[in-house]
Length: 194
Image 1 (cartoon, rainbow, N blue to C red):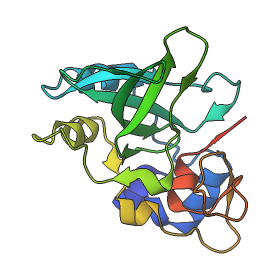
Image 2: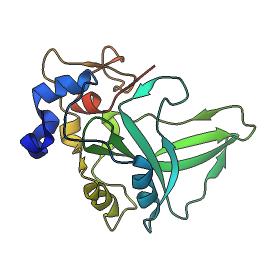
Image 3: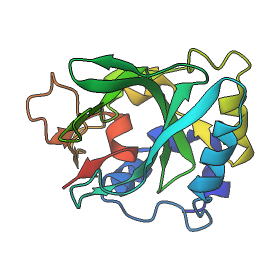
């Protein structure tokens, strides 16, 4: 299928969701832009700085259908808590298989002061938001649009996949019966497995 043939409505198209669940080529006429350039632009906004970029396997050798660009509020200092340096961040998650991005709520990541551990959150459908709270000038959506991305609306991302569709993922909501099968539109486009 060609992106030019389906426009903005591809996100919930059952045939395209099936391809996305299989990590198959969805659009023959689309190639992912250089995510490092996108991250650099996001980091130059007045309100945000790039905290980190998760671009491959989250350290486990797995594969993600997305790149996670973690943004901290410019000027915010990490805090020291319980032996960790803790940073609050929001994520811009960009899909590798389609021109789709998602905005995730503010969460925390920490690195142990002794260097022997860390924690962070993987993006899940429950964490979708419509805007990054400190992006008051709405530069993030503008930058993503300049690269051809549309932003997944939270209410669309939380929709259930059509019957018979699911995707192996470790990014599912905690209330699912089997936490290794993604059942939301978000999971079809944004999934990760070891």
